[in-house]
Image (cartoon, rainbow, N blue to C red; front, top):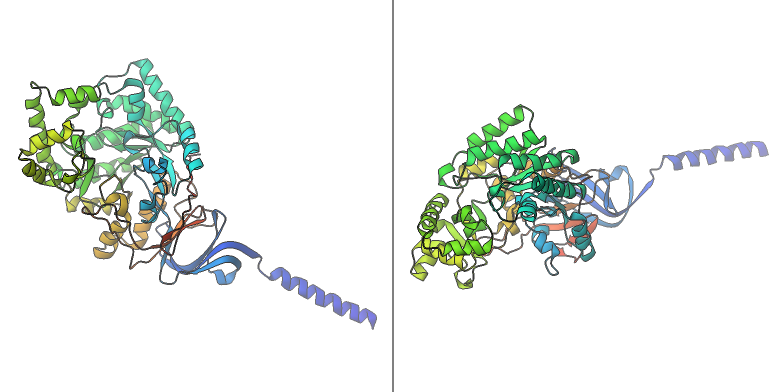
Length: 522
């Protein structure tokens, strides 16, 4: 009898042990997001599902009813979009991140951006380790990644001189590119339209770009001419492809566009050149912001670079040189025509007379009782101003936005609404109002595609083990609030946002978190 009881007990204990072993292990999570529409950043179709976050990482993606998750906080995302945080391929946000009052990068967070790339247009640092320490010690709201910049390096070695480097100077520049890449840059950027990059020959840029190749870096370029200022748009596209191809690195076109009346509707020709390069094995991509107006300084838009050679003192001297002024005036008039006339140049910031900000150059000329060329010269002599230049054709904008190799960026600058509203504007313009893109394509172009292009590891997609940079937004309420009259208005519709697992926006309000990191290429 006792033996029978012992056997029965042993069987029962075995069954209990077996059933216990069959129970799924408890997954401990900080957050469980339930029943959202998951758009995972890969371009795959959206689906209804759940996501769990633990620490700085994504713990689980799928159907939470099939697992045992114990979460500190559960959020119902029914009817909302859950996606990776957006990665902005082109910003000028380093000054904000370094500041004491704008380091949250809230204008980007409220667009759904959790990572910003800095150092574009040749303006990137090569001393990245020290900069990273400074930023992370102070705290930043978004992650940031860096490109090492040609203009910074050329200026460090040659100043603003319009000269060709000798062998020793070229080697000094090579060494600085290597330093930046060694310290974690994701690639080498140029601004060949700007001083001093505009003074460099193609061969110089190829030699410097080669230094990015051993690190798996990309070549990111504000090309030499997006219009008809010097070598022309088509030749500049050819040069950009040649640089990357000969250097052996992927090519990336910054803020791709056809700028000005002389090159409107040339996007077809640009696309054909890029597709031909891709067909022969060159990796070519681009980013684009969804605005008809570009943003720059008035002097960059209207004054040719020969006037700026040698630095500020020589620049201002030439602007007042009676022998040179006839040529300068003629060039300003022609450049104004290329941009679409004085009416197309809206003054947005940095003008000494702040009462004139928000007026276009034609209105300022009328108010000052000057010819538009003389008004431009007056502004330049007084230190310049930022402008929004309405110089793009909708045909070209839409042609580029639909290309599978074109991703999203802002190129955000002071006084232009693109700094506050590019992502919701693209969503509204090209997903909702004129559906040239699917929701899945919009998210991919704003997250996973950028991460893949720049080589940003474990970000840009909603996958288990990836960093917990993600957003929840209302598809009906995600919209831009900034425009050219009010360029610094925060966007709406981002309800929740995490940066490295830290809840940074909760119920559409900023939580004061500063959990961004400086990302470095491994």
